[in-house]
Amino acid sequence: MNAMNTVNILDSIIPISLFNKGQANKIFADVKKFGTRIVVKNNAPECILMSPQSYQQMMEEYENAILAAEAEKRLANKIEYISHEDVMRDFGIDSSDLDDVEVNLE
Figure 1: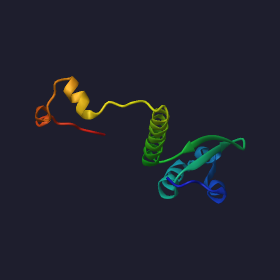
Figure 2 (figure 1 turned 90 degrees about the horizontal axis):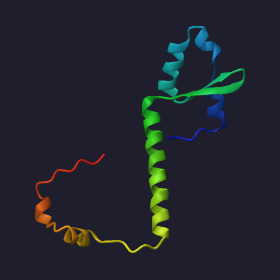
Figure 3 (figure 1 turned 60 degrees about the vertical axis):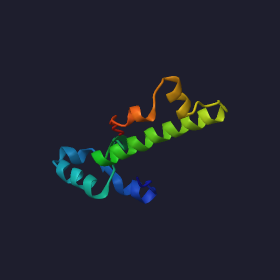
């Protein structure tokens, strides 16, 4: 996702009155074509318009940042970790037991 600079921000401001003037379709088309738009009401930001794809990407990046911060926090604690092999041995699982297991990761 691209960071917005001052020029982009100024170009992205949309007065809420344009919605009242029947220009919603044009505004939504601009969001698809140019990206994020900031809707202002009484010269104050009221909401942000963005495509569903941009929103999903932003949320994924946010979730990844939270996971990375948690991983760094855990690594900083210098905890002794249990190996994969030790876990399998403790539960009595052999690698051949996992041959027919299907795993779907998101």
